[in-house]
Amino acid sequence: MILGIESSCDETAAAVVTGDGRLLSSVVASQDELHARYGGVVPEIASRRHLELVSPVVRQALSEAGVDLASIGRVAVTRGPGLIGALLVGLSAAKAIAYSRRLPLVPVDHLQGHVASLYLGDEQVEPPFLCLLASGGHTLLLAVRERGSYERLGSTLDDAAGEAFDKGARLLGLGYPGGAAIDRLARDGDPTAFAFPVARAPGLDFSFSGVKTALLYAVRDLPEGELDARRADLAASYQHALVQALVQRARRAAAGERLQRIAVVGGVAANSALRAALPDAAFAPLSLCTDNAAMIAAVAVAAAARRFSLRHLDSCAVMRCLGLPQRRIFALFALEFAIVGVAACADGEASFLCWRHGSASLSADRRVCRSEISWQ
Ligand code: KG4
Ligand code: ZN
Image (cartoon, rainbow, N blue to C red; front, side, top):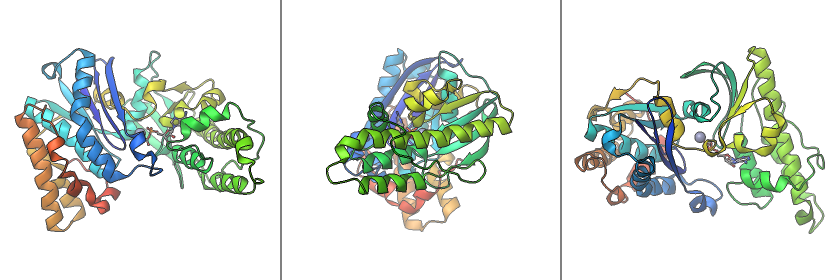
């Protein structure tokens, strides 16, 4: 049995998957409401909330699966990319559980996790396929020829597709995150009402800044008081332009790589217009499009695991990689050591609440946020 933990952005998630890849439970505690008032994820706030949620979420995943820690054979955890303070919470919890139970730990690439969400559906999708990964943080075209690896063919030059949905939603006054809100509103609108440009970046890359600016001007140029009447048309036309850009590039990449099958994963894979525009493609199950821990555990079904030891503490790796000032490194190291140590003593079930104060020093170092935590 595999326990998965995900905390790379603003979802605290845990899941249990069997050794042969059957999903037993998937618990996701979203922080959407917490960040909505800021119009986007605030890393510091996300880290603190992860600290509060990680322990109860893991407990709930175990209980919904009807198992206890003694039945778990390995622990899988997102190692990056993501916000460093947020990642560190999930990593510390996973390491604590692995260390205390002497379990192997599998550090998982978050993007690999999104691809693996395809292996958890009722209709499993087997490579080879062309994977369009469209989420709040990434827009990628990947050639997946076997499980566990991919070749990157194209990515975005500016915003991610989900980010473009979110920024569009903000311009239309729909709140954050806005992808699902645009999707719902667009059903009542005319996708041809406004001719927004479909991005034409070179090769297989994407660019969404042009269409975003076009929406900004369209909203600005509306006669006074017209926005309410035209909001659905604007949402439908904007969504149409984003979807066309994704579909055209995905089809071109599949043809160029001679891949028969297209698969779509990530939060934007939940979009109904995108699903309708690619009727022959495979989509991740709806519940596993946005960030979750089931996809992280799914990667660990076939991945190599390592026995965790204290020399794997990430602060050591961060110290080596970034050459940060000594004082900050010691603060990070002491905090991480304390979380892992205390949780390990309590058999991986310790409450992380008592470390909330420490999270300030943990996620305060914004400079570290640019780098992924490395697994040494
Ligand atoms: O995969 P995800 O949880 O985040 C990252 O890993 O970055 O995706 C979140 C993104 C958000 O930008 C959200 O607006 C978008 O997915 N999203 C959607 C829909 N549901 C979520 N975008 C378009 N249509 C949807 N139905
Ligand atoms: Zn994601």
